[in-house]
Image (cartoon, rainbow, N blue to C red; front, side, top):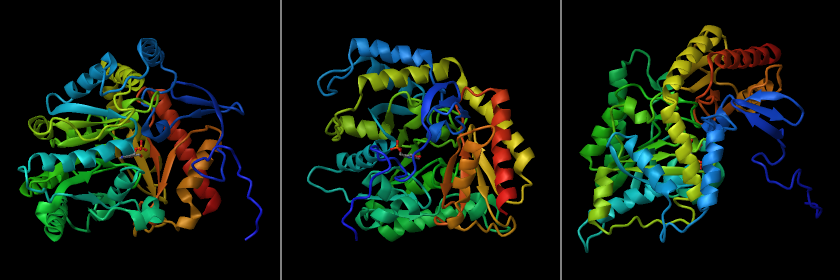
Length: 458
Ligand code: PLP
């Protein structure tokens, strides 16, 4: 090894240490303007975050007003009208299904809070002097729940776990995701598929000891790890029955697809299943400020108030006044402007156009999603669903092609879709304010990039 230091490419350690991404100098609505003058459509809202698009004046004003009132107070000593108002807005949005909200900064932190709250719930309901054995969580393979060690241990994303595998927590285990494109066997009915997955979950409870499991955790629509894969209708009802049978909690991770992106404000509204704890983030503050949270169901909230009366999990920036003011403004705009209806309407148009244009493409295996959360999975053989070799970096190169093409568009890309190691997808999750004309642009720009990429390389 030479003693000479490798000069870093930038003072800022970027997400990809050797690649400096293009610089954004202005933004408005669904568009970003780059230093070199190009205008790029924010086709995935960053990482499904910028639900209101960019430069919303009402959000800016709400944040400024809060800055004038107070920026930060310690949540143990004081409260702000922004944080109580935001909690009320969120709880009321569940039509009485949830009792309370806890507000922090990132999706990973929300998952950590959910893990600890589930553990505390069982401590609260265990008689004094006894010890709750429930310390295990059952999650799903090919899931993503965040980057901190608890959330990473919970997630089943092979690529993101890999380097840290040796230090991940051993009280998390994983069952199959519900992914009909790859999971449904030939000739198997949806009902039989659900039954098989419910049995697998039930078997996992029995394997680890039913009384040791605190919760089953799932994303209602799998985001980063699979590329917007919704479960088949009826799946979550069956999973909840298994949880109920064994006395475990149900946690929904709605960090990516919650707060309207699925076509209803909460994705669980379409499942007819209410979780005991729900995590939210990303679109919660639309990217104007970092904010995330957990919504807490009555069962858990009651246990806390009847027990120790406090959540043993305090953070410096919880209920941050500016973050709450920004988040509240975003959610009020979504409600008042009925943007969730636009998500459904524009989503229906988008999937129709995507399918018209791309379904018969020889390397497009699957187009799936809900609301304004759509993904395209690429395969080298449509019949066998054989994925491309990972070293070809198909999704990443399609992303670059789309960004650098004549109609520049930024699309989230992912790998490991097929088996955790192999498989490529891109995700299209534009802002909720998207217009019909912009949907047409998104489909055209995305399809052109995909077609040109495969024409050039294969
Ligand atoms: N949960 C889900 C479903 C996510 O998609 C993500 C991020 O992509 C997280 C949790 C973690 O959120 P964050 O990156 O804000 O920590």
